[in-house]
Image (cartoon, rainbow, N blue to C red; front, side, top):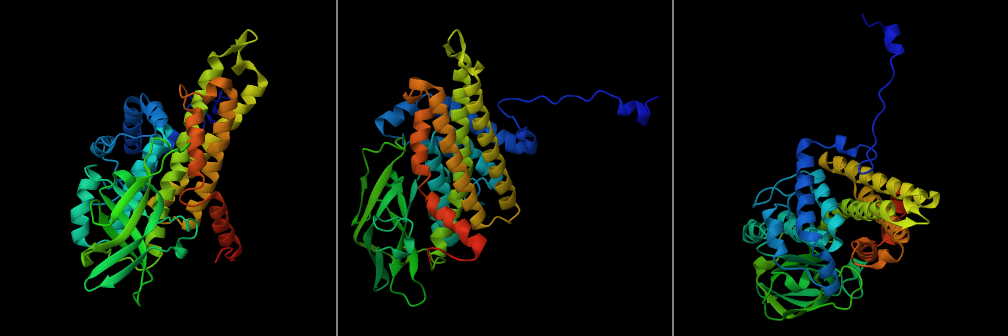
Length: 404
């Protein structure tokens, strides 16, 4: 018979630590969340990783990838109806993590499509606009882009110069947008512009490809996010019908709410990029022989690996916590800013440490590290620079807005 006294002397079972899941984060996920993550991870392993180095080197991403991602049900997956999967925020985050473990450009394609263009239409559009665009966008048959940033207004969208004026029942759109992901391949652009309306200072418009006066120019010679289409959008007296306007968006709150959705995905994506760099460095350190033994046996390399593992696990836990908050309807924009600031900066440090562990091999496209490191130099500044997110957090802490 077992008594309390004999139980107190029983030898405790030692928990096993898995290097690939050091803090047993898998246990915090539901079966459905793990299934979604594993499905996307398999897609990245089979479809993206064998070719992404070549895409990066050539500065392209295949258009047909959108159709494949549509069949995977990840485009606008966190939206309800209109062919969207209606998944949880956490499931969407896990998807972003796996996609960016492949490449930031692939995650950007999904993020801009689902969290910027589709969210804008889903949240601010008319029923007719939703029926017209969301089902083909969810299927990857139509690609969208999000025109907010301008050459002279990146962190300060309130100073945008793009204008829309009334002409009878139509709108005439003039202006320029810059650094627009998917711009050169998009079938529809969600474009934000100042208006002369008395009841609204800013409006969103749906501008289909082929509209007279609407042209795009792809940005070349990038050394970051090369497996991604980045473009300039130009609007020269573009005439749009009244029903091209998103009826429910009337201020900067419209586009900024979409950016919060996309930044949430970046919080997860950065953790995926960091994990990919860490795993590459860990595997390399076990195989690389110097001075007659694997470099993983040297204390200085183990210190680097331990710090990288810490940052990867901490970033993943932060992303998961924000995902749970979002699913509960309790996530604040400033918390997303903390997630983006912390996780992208951490991912950059992991990538740089992994690059050092791998020596000269770390700069080749045979390994993912230099590609991720270059990509993260874009991720740290797009959709809110690290400085701006620090000020958002500082404003929340002090009650004083530093840039308003």
